[in-house]
Amino acid sequence: HNILVLHGPNLNLLGLREPSIYGHQTLEDINGILRLDGEKMQVSVTCVQSNHEGVLVDQIHQALNKYQGILINAGAFTHTSVAIRDALAGVAIPAVEVHLSNIYRREEFRHHSYIAPVAIGQISGFGANSYRLGLRALVDYLQKDL
Ligand code: DQA
Image 1 (cartoon, rainbow, N blue to C red):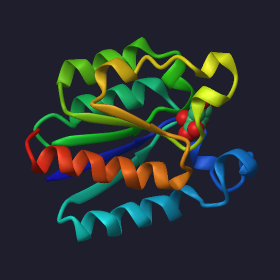
Image 2 (cartoon, rainbow, N blue to C red):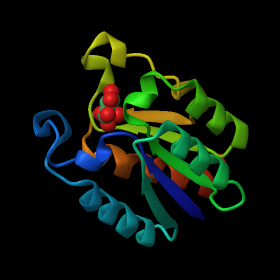
Image 3 (cartoon, rainbow, N blue to C red):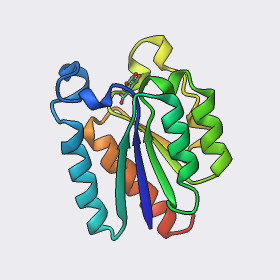
Image 4 (tube, protein in one colour):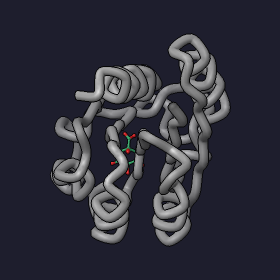
């Protein structure tokens, strides 16, 4: 299987950005770990980050016939983007939503996710480990054809 990992806005600042909330690992650190995890699970992992909603929508469209699963941290677009949600619903590629922080113990405006209803499931609050757990859950889902 080929997995697309999509990182939304401001995640390029990881390591630098509010480390007490998001941790000290950089995005490249996380991507490197995910690629290694992917090798162990015999899936190929491709990582893309964008600060632009439309680019993320385009990436989701272009995933058709190329990727069997999407792991997505839409960042702040989680709480605002009907367009990203519709793109995921449109391509109907199984997706897992992840967040570094636990969005439910933060500000009220982070409690709602537009992505959640079109995702298989969501992992939130485990730092970089959220991505690893999410990748694992997605690969399990695809391999078991659940
Ligand atoms: C985030 C949580 C969002 O509320 C926030 O806007 C982010 C990161 C997370 O990974 O914890 O940019 O998606």
